[in-house]
Length: 462
Image (cartoon, rainbow, N blue to C red):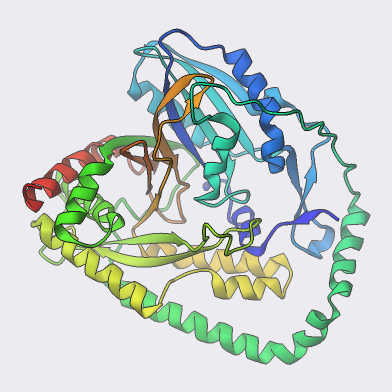
């Protein structure tokens, strides 16, 4: 029986449209002063595909929407299509790399093939090369996306051995097979079908209550007014990409001196950067001015507390006090807000819609995503994700990875998404922006290190 997508995984497929590609990924740079064998690297990726079986599978829709889509083996899998070789005019600059990444992000993944691509980019200055990855959000969540490292990276310069997996694609099911399988799946779980009518009233009441709680949270979010151009109607899929690197030690030093968490410090850095950026645009910054951030929190546990095949996320709305000129007060306000959110349990997640979608065809789930996208631009201004990455250096065929920047897709009505990943003692900020709405994304990215310096100085010696 084909592996069926979970409701939340499928939602990322349903949410994708012409102006909103739903792929995540990363931009990694490597030091290779002695040169690098790209052909051997491509071959190594092919050898290691057995470590991530999903990467040789594609999505098939079920006829008449009788069930959620399924994963099936791609009998015509073509490694050369998915792993592509690119180059910058040497000596390539980081600015040229960011421009290339922006162009790559605007291209949707081909739904008729496995939903991933890797670009090997040579020609960077100082003997460096880059790897740009794109993976559809339906395949992995923020933490699971790190599994790409199982394919590309090693913990030492020594390339680890990967035994051949002898993969042979399973026969692809016909449309009739998919429809029949969906019916059989429902029949194998008659309790779910029989209970549906009895549970419908309770489920709907619970769903309504959950949506009311969510809407109460959203109503309380009205202080997070639309901020132009953070909230905008995007006219296309074209993107810009910004990068900034800071040290994890500076974030921890601020945390140790001021309390809270490293994530609180990250949000304070983003707040300070947004404040600086808005000032360059002449935005009015009154004392109470805020930017409302949607901060996803993964509830995946390292002990396997959630299904391995699905995404599991919750999120908080956090008012970032960009109108406050004191960096310590900005941090204190953010820390207090995060403590309150965690204590109240009012995480704004997709739980209610997931429950409904589990009892109904994908049409309802798609409708839920559409409803969410319609009010998202009024409920928050910017998406900020922070995912811990490897703490030790990693290598690709002996070449040491220098940087690891995340790529986060834009939410509906949003002009920029900010992703943060820690790696080898550094914090890497990756900014995905609408090309037309945010031509100065580099100004915002460059403000991140400056905001941390300001915060570190205000926290005092330590």
